[in-house]
Length: 383
Ligand code: FAD
Ligand code: UDP
Image (cartoon, rainbow, N blue to C red; front, side):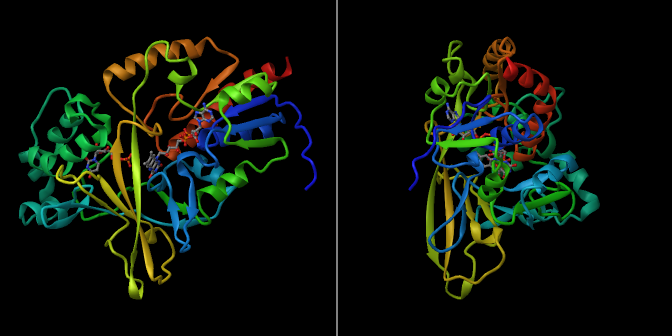
């Protein structure tokens, strides 16, 4: 093998090869024509969206099911430059009692669970009769109880949320459960966005194309601190945890983590184990929150085996979720004030902004951040 040449110094160092970092790197490399070094402490690109084929050829999402959905044409157009798409609409059932019921709650969920015998036109009145009106919807409990009532809250939300976050829903912002709507019709799709699809060859292949630019170098298994000492960069794009960047001087920001138990089961005849791609378990009698069967995400090829990922929430491990609650928001604000004083650093993404964002939102945020910061980045790199 030829000895590797020492790489030229980078103009910009990007920390993190997930959506935020990869998109910022691509924009800086191609629009500003600057040299970018992208580092990630993990041994792979794609951040939490990383996927890979297992030994049976089933595409596994290593960090939990990642379903792409978007309403922004701009976001879809940008990513479509780097991937074709496999149309996929995600469906979820909740395991409640002996039943597997559609989530989000819809007409069929209500009729099956509460024996209400409703038709579409009756659902709003049923919900209104269940709901506990409140002047101010503040918490994750309020968001459900004020719209769907306490029975739905107890059956579908309370236990799941307590397990997922390690907190009572009363301790979490309304935005956490407000992500899940209620439907008055029989639509059982998890999302209703105009665009719903998975990258045809997976997220990792899409990221490899985003990062495939002569101005971009990627170094994996590399910590920010290690790269910063040698990169020679004049601007930094940082997509890791903001409290870590500032050495937790205002205290640690909490993040929720997960562990995944990947199991393979024989499926003679190619049948699936679950009726849909994901089953949720709101009951606190079991420790896992949800099970994903990846076969549903792919073109139906009969296989003798299927792969299931059981998700177990955890207080320690990779920082997967910022925890939306008032005390954490306040602490983040202190870091945000500090971040604004740093014209040499651009903070972007779910961990650097401490926001519970989906992939389409992070893509939109990275594109908008590049547009806002391009002049600053170009100027600092010229110095
Ligand atoms: P990340 O993907 O977290 O990337 C940050 C990268 O920075 C990481 O790879 C990390 O290793 C690296 N890094 C951090 N600090 C350092 C350091 N000091 N040195 C070197 N490297 C560092 N979104 C959807 O739209 N649909 C879904 O179905 C969906 N499902 C999800 C399921 C789970 C379980 C989780 C956790 C998230 C899900 N998301 C989903 C959200 C999605 O993962 C995020 O929106 C997206 O990955 C955020 O991209 P990012 O670049 O901001 O962060
Ligand atoms: N949630 C719930 N029961 C469910 C699904 C969701 O209580 O069956 C709540 C829970 O608090 C969860 C939040 O709604 O953390 C958001 O759910 P989502 O599926 O969007 O979570 P993510 O995919 O981001 O983990």
